Image 1 (cartoon, helix red, strand yellow):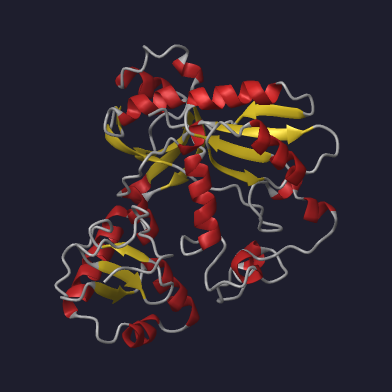
Image 2 (image 1 turned 180 degrees about the horizontal axis):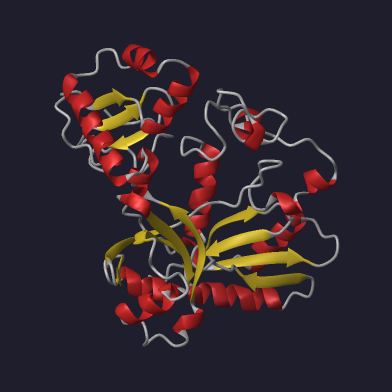
Length: 357
């Protein structure tokens, strides 16, 4: 049984091909292939298996008694499915990660060349984007444009089939005096080095990564890696988030996404986390530079969508302000993987990141 048109696997982003089992959360209605989610021990003969994902279970727990609602929602689910879920939760407790992070760990993302041949077209003066679009289409009538879109700033972003066609289109558009053309800038990748010992010297961590993983051959590599943040992990260890050059990321990818340190070998994952304003709950800026805050608008809670700061929220209700504003299912927080707006922003960052491979 195939999944609906708008239902994609959270791991591989592909639809149900009907060859395996399809897991579907009864609360958020999201899911994916059982193989992608590392839940292959399902004995149910049904092609679609209902269950409750960890994030939704936490939401349920905050609203009512967890066991009562799960028993009602999962009525008819086979014992084998419950055993598989329990096994997964056991692995979660062992690794100290929630369901979303477990899914993120086993993702085999398909790298795309889609955003490598972008052109950003701006108009000089007060020319409207719609009129500019007609002019661009006429100028590039002999060049195949794969897709185009308008930005919030009134610019046009076009995607071309190859680098040669992008350069040809750029030369044509440069001849027009009222247009400003630039290549689409892609971001440097961020990676997370997992479970590093706390007694690891933070100041010498980058130097140790370079020496122990033979990265000295990269020109100026000491300036191409820097520590962005850190967060506590299971067993008293630390996850470090690093920003690196695409060349460095490609080299690490060639080492099976593993880095050697003096305490062992550590797994590396790509880190995509949107910049979220905790005042207006929009993406792309911090609350320090929020125009709504400057104008004196009341903040919105990232937990319950109320008009107060999220850090002072005492409510057990979870409601997404962004989804509620667009009339979507909103029984989750703004940064939940159940939120289609949040996951769309994550995918936008992933596609606009230059991984180097």
